[in-house]
Amino acid sequence: MLAHPEPSAPARDIIIGIDAGTSVIKAVAFSRDGQQIATSAVQNRYVTTPDGAATQDMARTWADCAAALRGLGDKVDGLAKRTAALGVTAQGDGTWLVGASNAPVSDAWLWLDARAAATTADLAAGPLNRARFEATGTGLNTCQQGAQLAYMERHFPALLAQSETALHCKDWLYLNLTGIRATDPSEASFTFGNFRTRAYDDLVLEALGLTHRRALLPQIIDGTETTHPLTEAAARETGLLAGTPVSLGYVDMVMTALGAGVHTGDAGAACSTIGSTGVHMKAVRDDAIHLNDAGTGYVICLPAARMVTQVQTNMAATLNIDWVLNMAADLQAETGPAPNHAEMVRRIDGWMARSDPGQILYHPYISEAGERGPMVNAAARAGFIGLSAHHRFPDLLRAVVEGLGLAARDCYGAMGEMPTELRLTGGAARSEALRGVLAAATGAPVRVSAREEAGAAGCAMMAAVAIGAYPDMDACIAEWVTPLLGAPEAPAPDLQRIYGGIYPAYARARDALAPVWSDLAAHRAASARTHQNKSPAADRAGLSEGE
Image 1 (cartoon, helix red, strand yellow):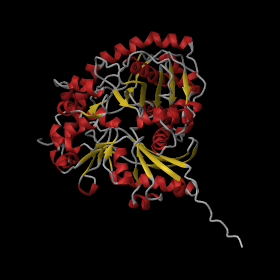
Image 2: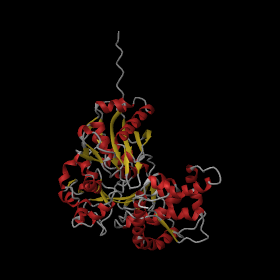
Image 3: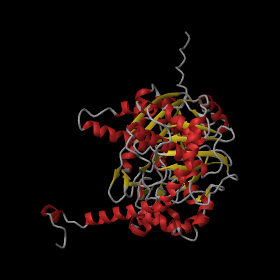
């Protein structure tokens, strides 16, 4: 009698990418050749306060990540046994402090946190700041962990005294997944190191006044070469198998750009992510970087030998569009039902068609943290220039969208030559009108990647290389990225001429408004102090303190 063979074990045919954004954490399952299989998402939360703080509960962030992975398991049959590896990326900058037993010391300080603005200005005016910039390739701004740690050193030294390691968001998730405290070459070098060596730099720490805090910096590992096994505790929380290889991805900006086509070997190609923020980047060799005189932007390493991305980032991109649509919705709600935001988004192209280009200038600095690209100014704020009585809502909407295009041109100009081709990702890339504005403003044809979850794909690609599914990142890119790039959409000549004509006025106005923004910031600060000095009891009595 013949024995029946044992059923074969499920093939390890899935690679998971985790992309933990500021408000949403996604877990995405991909096949080994890059096909997206399923996505699970969990809303994350952060808290802002009037003093500029923006913080996130670290324990909750890990719990949400685990929940996203369990949710993915509900959608994919046999996910745990089929998973060959997982990679993790997350929101960049910010400060995630851990102490004894890997416990959070406080809530995380996010990249949105503006409390370090004055400290940042002091450090930027210091004698070593240019040397720091030459090493990191990165302009100092309030988003960064270096500025935030320097602020904590001045105002919350006890917080640092309790801390053993300063992590970033993806590093915190990696710690919970593997038990390993580590960071990656990208965030390590643009914050505390040198992009040429991909290692920490003593001069940078000195420029930040943090030499004596060096012990807070974790080891640097490259997720294309090194993985650590999923721990038993993490396996119980995520539903995956203990021992599954975990790869620490690079920061989300470059993971998204990698998944969307920033590095495919095509000279002059660039990538813009038009999401809540605007991220504009070019892939170049580390010996071909253009370090501008203003000392702004980022240089962020790619998971490829000698390759880095030169980056300029707008603090806010589609947040500007959300603002103008919300204003319109609020007005409509005064007299009837509030309109559906998704429906208003779908109407953007129609409103754009009812307006003339280049009539109003708009600087898209709607974030309360100001702007960081191509200039760093925490006091910068959004505004319209050129309004007249005949302008209506479609004209304002068009100005906001054109502001995003001119901001992209502003950023690429600060990095040297304009791109010869622009790859787009982010939700706004679905708008034909916005694509047309970006193409005309930069003078480059645009191509949209069909990759839905580019950030998760970027770190999953690193995991695929780490486990030997591909010999190197270039081979993985050739299969996961290049085939998904759409056809080029050339800029409209008339529109390109219009934006080329108004851009100089946009740039001059940006520079001229700097003292106005400073005056307004001083007024806001004085008003806040007055409000804080008013006691609740006196306020109820209609009297301020001292009266």
